[in-house]
Length: 431
Image 1 (cartoon, rainbow, N blue to C red):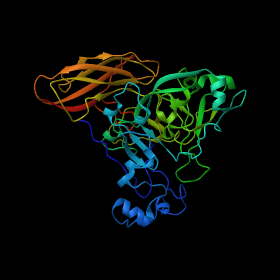
Image 2: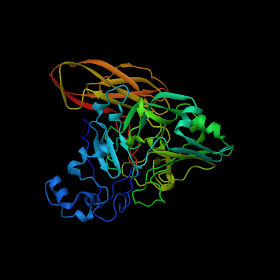
Image 3: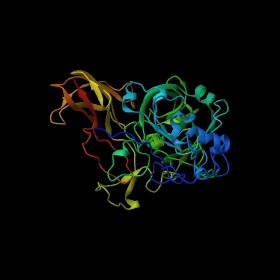
């Protein structure tokens, strides 16, 4: 049966980052001084809100939302049913059963932040710079993007590279995602390729570098929380968008409003939120979360718990084949017959087959599988299941992609807890 999500909290004011390293101390982000969030509310008010005194209130980092009422805080405004994993930076996942829609509603799209979201996100004054090794440096407003380039709408799958990390044993540091750091919303914007072509990509360019307006957790204005990029060949594909709408409306503030990249099939960390600049470089980008072991895995299979030299890590590119059961919910009581459904996806590839099992993998049944709506969208699947007698069952889902890669039963362990694509299982009771 799938593991229940656990809300994780950072110690000593440092929320675990998705690269496995703790975030830096948080003085000065929202308020100066150590009392942080309490400074604006008052200690007595805060104690009343949590129902007890707070002996270590002076140690609370700035901007910390107390766990006792974090789920009701403004950080999840406009979201529905998400599980808050960290509040500094804000990270929240969606329970699998709430991802049942073919197109993920904005209210149920996961949140993955590395820093502090910007305060000024006025789309009227927002600009995007394209520079580096280009023939023509561009300074574009959102209105310019709409007027100068073809506006397209695509359903695109975004997944955090650490989705599924909570199942690793030995545990891997970082946000303990279960299954819900994935979504497939409808995005509207312009193709990154078109914008880069207008700027003029010089012959020595090998990589893009992405920059956003979010602030570093330390409060240091000279430090960036994350700046990743793409090989230029990937950046010039047709389904990477510079997006300004999500499901027909303005982007949600926690999903990168007013402008972001959407890079389907690769770790969502490459899809820079609050996008302000794209630089074209003549080397592999070396921004924050691009070097060391961030968003990297060993170049060869390793045993669980094995130490791996840093030089043996390689950058994650395409995400692996994966599927999700969205109905019925894990732990549900159901009748003797039910529909089972979900989604499947695989990096830059398509899904060719989806099988389910109700007898712990002894036999498998191929299900009805939809084609992707467009390149980069997940594929929806469904099947009718009749249980032979009352009792406890597990529904297992196993996807096979267009290149023949199939989901495994066991985790391919790596030190950072990335790329867990084991078969999704939900337990049900039939009666």
